Length: 115
Length: 117
Image 1: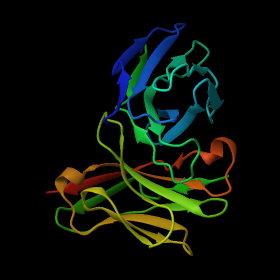
Image 2: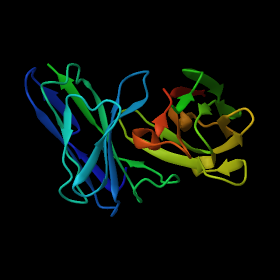
Image 3: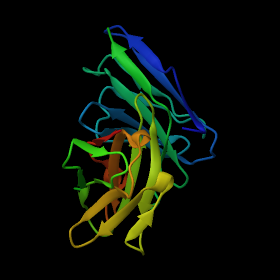
């Protein structure tokens, strides 16, 4: 987990609210990623960014939005359009942009619960 | 499309015995394979990866993995299990000829390893 911080650790959201999850890294990595983890389903890619001011949709981007204004920061907004947002959200980063041998390193995660 | 299968949701092993966590994959071109471990309510920790070369890859905490191209497998192994190895293990893959979001890692569904004292 070292070098990548996520906040808050736990987050509760009322239906209809947008919430933003923070992800910061001090590893000087170019690429950053957001995953959603549900029990028994492994990790699914939401969005990824290979360089500042650019990002791409992953496999389950609907109902989510991101920004990449700074190299070290990649916040994720869970909008009210996301029908089932309760999950564990993981942020990751890697050294190079799209290198096949890149290792992704993960933050400690944010557990989001919809009330 | 690339995919990863971890056929066992749960693996139980006695402390001191060897352990194996299975992983098979399907990709376009040569595979780039990774193993991660996750402790409860924590992020994933990188254990090891296979890029090319020696089929036996050594990683952190005494773990190793064996790449078998003909069986498209990348099983995680440890000669002597510890109770502290109990955790959720994920295999991940990307393929040489993958494109778009598929060029990113595809994760298996995870295997819960329990080491019994």
